[in-house]
Image (cartoon, rainbow, N blue to C red; front, top):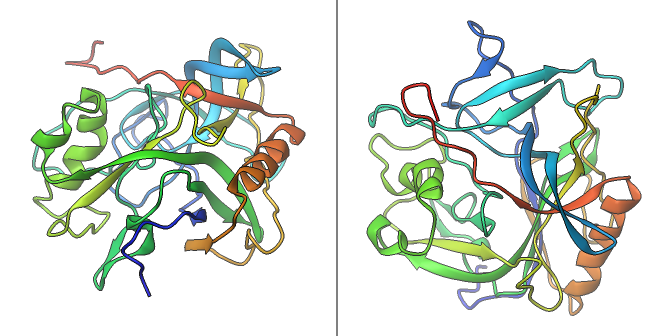
Length: 292
């Protein structure tokens, strides 16, 4: 039963975890995805925490970026779960009648955003459409019956979207081009199968500088070293009775009076895996006619 009053929840969110592969006709590039969602291991300028102090650096991390990317490096995988490729994200707008995947969640720019995926089914809204600020979402995937994490999203605020024009004053042009156009302009219908007859809710992530209940959104990462010869596997998160290792899709909801403790447990496990806490990643550049 969906409670249409906002609920304060800890969410384990399962999305597809397979890694993207380069174009067949150009192994140094990948085009805008027009098929099922996948993950990329990316290099991008950003900010991570060192002893709780923000440090600016090029970062490498796992995440969702469905527009184009250049392949910077191919790795020889030593451990299952490590990436095969290192991508440099960018985007270039294509013809309007092409069906292009959106990027959701979106971890680039001043705020993280989550807008569509699994918020509605053919039967109507799910509970993900009614989350209270302070809720925590762990976006990740199932690998070898273990939950592996790519994004921690802490809900700070939200907008009820009625139109692209109405929401455009609150978000970047990049986010509109990369995500919102493909959700709100569903002609032809987009691959996410979002119900465009119902309003979408755009969640805005809490940040390190503007947290909620001392929590902020982040992604596991490490600083980029131009001598790097391999990537890292996404960290395994284990929280008894909260994180399920048997889920391959959909989500698990937990009502807990101390979400701050669950968030801290997640952060501690990321750091114990030898990874840093990424709090910001620059908006990837827009290329026009082959140039930035």
